[in-house]
Length: 126
Image (cartoon, rainbow, N blue to C red; front, side, top):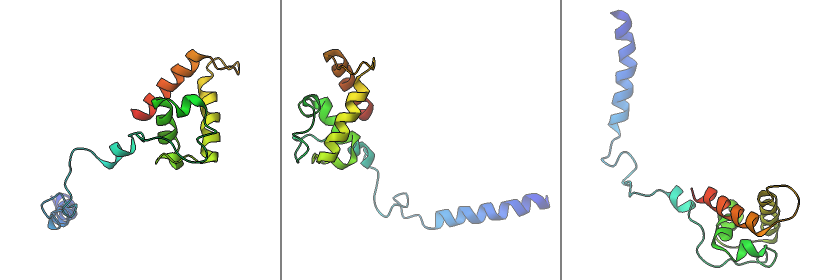
């Protein structure tokens, strides 16, 4: 019996401390859950046109397709707002070429590019 009494004191003290600061909005200072979180916003691809000095360097399939723009803006944090630097463009081109070359023959075919665009965009939009 004594062992149970010693165990319940810290538990009850902790519960009392948790409920003491309750302000009616789950303790978030008036911010309530509105259905979507900031993480859902972060997974949305940039909807506008890509800008910046790196756009000229990007491969055509990355800058001219919706899937390619999703890969660049969601896959590379520095381009999340649609502004693509030269460094990001080089990294995106290299990453995508390696990702798309499924048979590792160093030649990209149209089916490989299309499949990789859909798979990579789906990976980021999931």
